[in-house]
Image 1 (cartoon, one colour):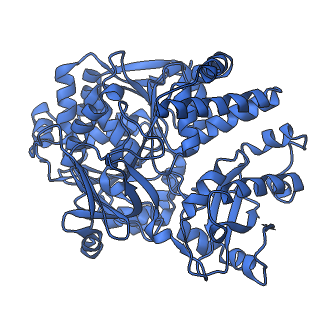
Image 2 (spheres, one colour):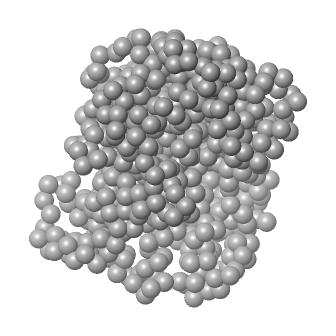
Image 3 (cartoon, helix red, strand yellow):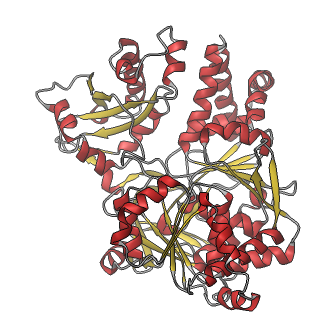
Length: 610
């Protein structure tokens, strides 16, 4: 087996818990602005470390007065906002355990996570969230308290806790040690029924303390590091970064509505971002189509081509003078405006959940935004590896973070051990036993390691397609480059035990009107109408042809079906981090997939499904 391990930087403290991270931050820099809350006029209201801790303690007192006991589990369904992290730390200070509920979860999914976890209370944000919970509330007799944020219930909880003294909260805060459960997070269920991942206090504490040093240029920015969170805090990726920022003293703002992301970035001016590749694709595609609308599409594409060439040349160690001059020109004409649109201060971005692709990696680095692609799962408290500011290899997900080791099984499966690996699956000893080989967690992902220990993800073990001819095909190798096309939203490659590879395709409903207008077509065309339009079909075929050039003939897509609606989280086809639920999609569109193979010749073409 190939094995790499990065030594830990910080010695572990088995008695430390997550609440200690906030206590240490307040002791070190009580007046540091730790959070910024959006104001109605588009500004930001600061919250210092001391003020945040005071609010945390007040809410923790309210939980105690409401009957929440140490060890109790509290469900939380809430969009990404300041109150999410406030509740998170208040639960820890009260000795309780948070069980996140994705805000798009169905009533049945809410029932499962709340019943399986044994939660005794639930906090919901909106009336819609309450309605979904209320539908299954009669089946959850263990839930004693139900609170709704939008009704002002957090203030009511705080008001009810004024008689609880500080000593009681301090006692509760210190109960948990490193090996105790800090949170119970249910997987997205992309491969079946969600499993509850038991993440410990040590997972958060040791990973935060080591990561902050490994990424010191990002987290400990001497000019004042700041980040604007917009991906869901219900997922461990953003949740860990939120805890890491408390530890590192990073200023954090929140914007749950991605349609308002660009204005929020311009006013907040973050120094680093946390996002999934789809966000970086969107920013690029919007900029390209905007340039096209203004008659500057050719200039933008030439600028992008120059940016990729410039960044690639940096890796080679020599940038030709002509390329330097050309890049300097485009930097002034194009790239400066893009940097300003992101607030003007973004130097780094951490990307995870899916491959970014070398083209976008090089483009953003030339822009001045170094995307540090990383890798991890819920079971690894999110990050297991990440590219480093001082040494980043575009196309890889970086080396293991300090205190973490990788090894590759004989079939290429990635296995992980270290400070970040979860304790167990809740109430599921069989799944826990199946997931481990000794202390090595079997991820189900396939990868390769280079001589420096930098990891490259090559596919998912359970998603490998084996055609009728015996050819092994990794769907991601085709899906990722096709999805980069501005017209395309999602791609699902199919063909297991079939004579050739095919694909389900959906159109990007946001980008569609702009693309149509830029190509001389009716911008008011519906998605269903666009799905059968020759110009749209030709563009989808072009994107597929480009992806096919990257693989062998046996692996190439021969037919595709365009659906007349997108795949969404609400529809149950995407996870909260926007990854496709392949198993669910294949079940729901089984007839559509079979239709592509019913008497179909192995030739390129398309069908449209309504």
